Length: 440
Image (tube, rainbow, N blue to C red; front, top):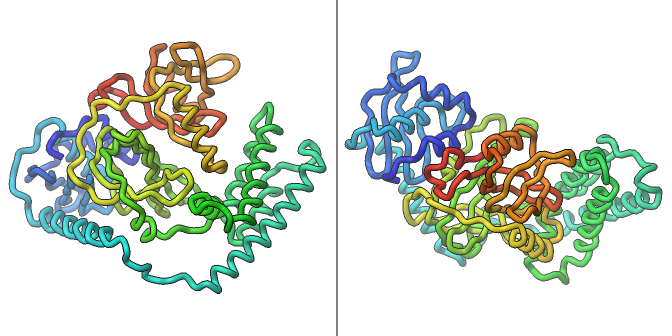
């Protein structure tokens, strides 16, 4: 990408604020910097005798540095980007340490393109029918036990049964043994629902019903449409192979990168990226996982850019998760991304639920909504005075309120049927220059 990023986009790519602060302090430590159409590079003086060799592939983006940091991108890559933004990196010829890595990346990308073009290529390993049958029987037996457990609790009354974590964890462990980890995750989320305050029985009964519907759907899975059957298997926790996803039809668009977020649970880091097709208006989510460190194998697309590329969606009744496919050009800064009003966003969510009733949340990009805080909680209010409950943690909500200053924002987030969990905000129509056009 030949057009420099904005400082806000660099901040959005940073693993944390501490990395950005450290990056700013390195501005005088650089030597032998340069730039080309596809990259920037330089040597950064560190505590050792040998400087750190740093390269940023602008077509990815992707980052490489000889430092031992476990953060990704590291402070040296972030610092190099800030120099580029300030116009302090001259044009030049790529040095050996950069050119070798960049050429290797280009070759791998070309090889991946060749592989995905062969749609009829058979799977590397055909699943053993006997193994699949044994798993199906274990799942069915586990779900039979779960149905009895749910029925007993409803008959006894939600107010007379325990809703502590250990109660749900015990039956969740049974689902793990039955090879239905997706159901186990649903069960382990229920204590939080029971402790959510007023109207918790209604919310809990709704989640019980959703699990019960999944049990019944699995019993009839062979009679369901193929896309819905794949959704049932996914929600139960049956894996989908990456090679199978890459064989799904490619969906090409200029995919606008609206938000990114990294979360951690028991040292497992999850990176989530929100994409929206500029032409199609279609949503896509990229998910990556790593253990023990935030150093993901590949860099995430940069917030505030649009990537002309193919996406391959995981098969489902309401496809959302996707994998990146062939990239047809370098990322470009986006100037606008029109959102929808509350009616349009809720209608889209209703369509998704009609296709896949186990959908936990769906992205929204809401135009001209003002965050407010009142006695009855937090809300996003549109110009007509209609409101959606605003979820998320207090830090995100207070930041939304402070940035808005009583004025409307464009907000990107996930609607779960009860509240919108914000992921990013934009204060103006020009997303490439707005001071707050970044992830929360």
